[in-house]
Length: 352
Length: 90
Image (cartoon, rainbow over the protein chains, first blue to last red):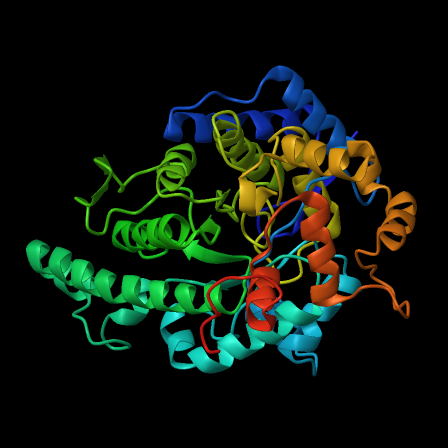
């Protein structure tokens, strides 16, 4: 009997039960080899095979095992473009957040600007503060203020710092490292400025999202910012990563004596804990040429390695293109619900 | 509880359930929680006149769970309901 499931690009694929098991095993083995962590157990793969073999359209976790959700990208899914799976609804941020709370039943929400990086948000600081302040008065669920540190915007042509991508190909390694350190300082200042002002507005926390998208220098800035926000001001911090491995564009940066380049999710978790982080969001990037089961097997192996050692809640990213979910702007509910349930039942996630 | 106390999900559920005098399983029961939330006056998702909303609901939640909620503390300082330094911008 053939089982209908999906590829990492969301297209349909049919697998036998044996092929399905092999996909989970191979995805898990890939992650285990890369991050040097254990593979999924036979029982865990049994559960996954049964889940994917079931003909039901959707899947869910066992009653009583429900977890809470944190979110990135504010109400972009309502009022933004296809880039954020947005439907361009004529809904402003304040209305959108209220809808997410009451109509969509979200457990928490993140407030941010449509232009989601900290650099542009800093120029709108007063407006951002006002919207947070007003929403804190009208909603009940926890509200985090969030942004992407997005160090890339600090480099030319978008920013004033020399671009390491221009310097590295011509062998200017020291110059490339120096410009990342200098840009990282500017990014750190912006992260702290925006976080501090949201503390004053009554926010429940700060969400650093898509962290380390430009590598170890960005991760270093976020860890420093987290240290300040969490330990100096007491405001809780969630750190959601951008990729399963921290790229070493700089290569030499260390935090608390640990080299950041090349860190895998369980190592990222530990360094985030050291920086005072309250919630950690690991990422496993979807390989569109592999099947959804292969991608989910990989993602669960990374996440399990985190939740087994975590001292803080772990909220794996389970959205478009991460956490086993296919890379497609309208992810199919059959695979989204299965990935979400698996993150809880097998990954032992504290939230999504 | 996850944000302010860094509690893992099981511990967080047990803490909240204990404070509300229910079981952790009850927390995800929409029928039971709808009635309990109205009874405790901590806010409901549908429009019910007179039920605590927004900041008022959060103030009651903070008291029930014995936690501090940032915006509730800011509100108290702004209004002078408790002694403490005035919030920025006052």
